Image (cartoon, rainbow, N blue to C red; front, side, top):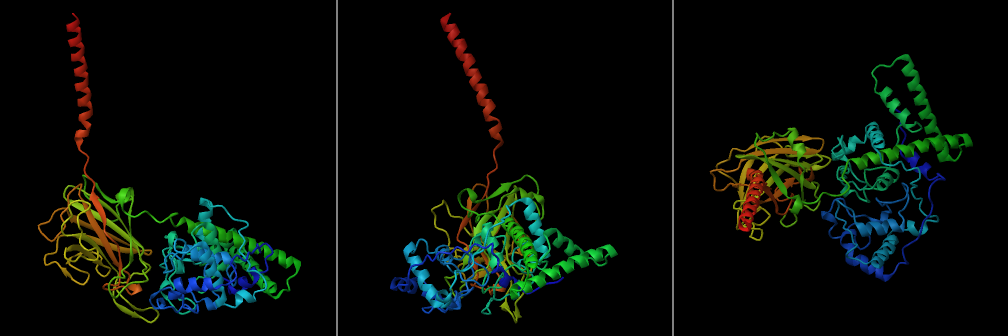
Length: 565
């Protein structure tokens, strides 16, 4: 399959007359106020000279932006262009989800944020040297979201090998993911497309489309390159089908050669456009090819949008608390369809930054859980996204040392009496002990029971209970099924009964991210409950009450009749 370097499209996109060139210089003139606000709020990470070398930068990944390079990831402008003032203001306001860059909307006034925009621009001379406004990405020709568009985008996702970085279902687990680096040589993980709430620059379809057309400067994500440039969507699909055939008929070979020639002509016109020597007919052919290119980008954006929920799920509190559902039958195994009848409870995770070594750059976002129980046992199904499957400690020349993936589910040894009762310290206990189930990726069918009185004070229980477990890793996600009896004979174990709210918390380790020991992601305390079994008496009381009421009315009527007589 013919492919050209992405630089062609970068050069040519600037010549499109259809682009919207409207640009407003919104920031005020640089002032001492902007410098003051920057040094107070921004310099700790970005450095006093804007080089991304502040005192906190060493612990952060991705690294803070080096403003002196003029490379900005999130823009509404074409590849190779500077951002607009509004782009800079929006990032300062909203932050960069999934990174250490917070949103400053509640901490800085709008005037202060505009002052910071003006001051940031002084670090790069390109802002004042530019004689024309940056070329903004046009949203003309937008293709509305639909199931048909999503299906087309899904085919393009495969055809253009997006899975090599983002994985087959978009969880960022592609084969290239562990080796990607940004322009400064730091590891650059591809986005988990199933977690749209972590998309930097927004997760609506327009935002996603802009990332394709403009790329993410300085990162491993280039602007979208169409290897089938010059072909319509239908022709691209057909070309890919023929290209993957082991043997072709004579008619298929002729069709393939015609499509290949059309692509070759389109790439040649790209060269001519870059040189400024294309004639009118060639310019028209180019415009037609670019129209198809934009259509593909919109379909791809619609597909990416379909992979994620609109908003981050609500945490497992209140109405979302984990409620284990009662069943009279045997508890479902890991792959049983019965699990699909339950909604997941969502448990957010954050980096552990209280005790050394700390995790300032977490890669595991959350754990999801479901549960069933019967008269004697309880079963849980835990899932969490992890871009890599690590089962042992090993050295990697590209990413350094990696460790084993793992998870621990934490409960108090003694369930607190009432919602205001004191719980053990959430970080693996202290004066009050916690009971733990620990699972490691190297032993997928084993749970180890631990008792801990501190994050560095955990011991395996001498008597391991009869806990069944089964784990697997597929398409960037771990699934862990755990089953245990409700009651045990071990006083160090958790004892369960319906209707009692039980504190639960999590720790997880991503070995590829250097997680080991106290360097991990954690949750605070949440709760789960074995949902009480509805009593069968509820079916008896209504007719009984109705019968008694009827008898009372009959008796009252007879009493009145006799009295009147």
